[in-house]
Amino acid sequence: MSLFRDAQRATLVSPDLDPSDLPRLQAFWKLSQKYDDRLQASIREISASVPGLAAIVDQIAPEQQEAERAESLRLQDAAINQGDWVPYLRRMHDLGTQYAQLGMSFSDWMSLAHGWLMAIVDIARDAYDQGDPAAMDAVQGANRFAGIAMAAIGESYLATKEEVIVRQQEAISELSTPVLQVADHLLVMPMVGGIDTHRARELTETMLHAIRDRRAHAVVIDVTGVPIVDSRVATHLLQAVEAGRLMGARVIVTGISAEIAMTMVSMGANLPGVPTAGDLQAGLELAQRYLADLPGGGPET
Amino acid sequence: MTVPVLSLDGILIAPVQTELSDEGWVRLREELLRKVGDRKASGAVLDLSGLELVDSYAGRVLVGIAQALSLRGAHTVIAGLHPDVAFTMVHLGMDLRGIETALDLEDAYVRLRRRRRQAGRGHG
Image 1 (cartoon, rainbow over the protein chains, first blue to last red):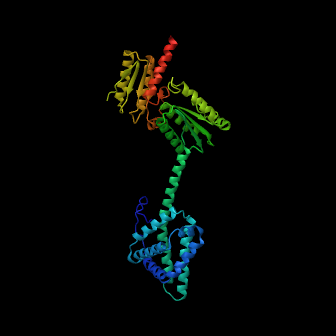
Image 2 (image 1 turned 90 degrees about the vertical axis):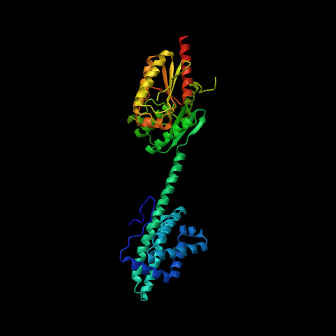
Image 3 (image 1 turned 180 degrees about the vertical axis):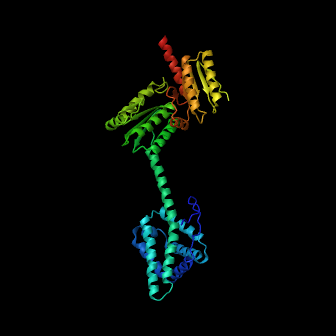
């Protein structure tokens, strides 16, 4: 059961209810209204006992908490008793986003949801003992209601968390393909970490744009910090070197360790025609000699 | 669209401002070959900074131009390729390793001037 007409744009739709759902939902509503104080006390207990939740609840002023609770009840009423689900679902959707942005963990949220349900079950058991004929229906209604609410909260919670992760990955990417200008017309790109196809593409694009923007004639790509340089990585490096050359820059690769060099050769993955140097220092010297030889690359004559 | 081929002190300059058709590339090659003789040019710069795309036909023509001009004593440099164009060309597997390259027209021109000076000294 998806509550979204279109997952991408999160257009909310009313849940598909069975004929048996409505009377159960209404029984749940009546029970929760009758024992509202007890239910609120249970929820406060749960929030206080889960450290992650307590921290979040503390951030909201009591008056605002009360106002939000009243609003939630009003929307629940409209959903269950008048069939107007969308405003309630929209609110649950917003709640999910809020939880994710506040950094609530998935397990803490589960504790809250589970605790709420258990509180209802407790109340229903007591009601049953006192002869309330609708107690069982109320429990089933609570289950159904919780399923609907949790689906709405869960989807937006996850979507928000994914957005955060994507933004973090982009930030890491930016940090991980630095371009340093160490002298006129000379750039250094110290690579750290694995180079997969995606990163190789980024590395090459960043390098090419930097060549143009900083008017570079030489680039030293240092792979000392790259743990695996296999034939795929070697191909990526070859492509970067040639693309740089098409823009008039000499691209030098440094930092291939002795072990990696032997592995590459045994795999037939060497870098034919690519200027290399043992370490970054040697690579910089090579680059500077090359630049000095260029017309206009060294000091003005 | 015809590319004007200018001559500046023995070096030809061909600014390619927009995409060329296959025929356009062929006309450019013919014009360069003609002018290299007329002007006794020692070098040619093909400024490709106006191109958003270099397809495989254009790539082959560029290599052909460099080879033909070389047979007539002129050295070719292509310049001004946009980062995205260079990226795409390499990933399409185009092989332009026979041609010298430069960041822009000015770099290319200065390089050809120096090359001629050095060649002149060699013969002197």
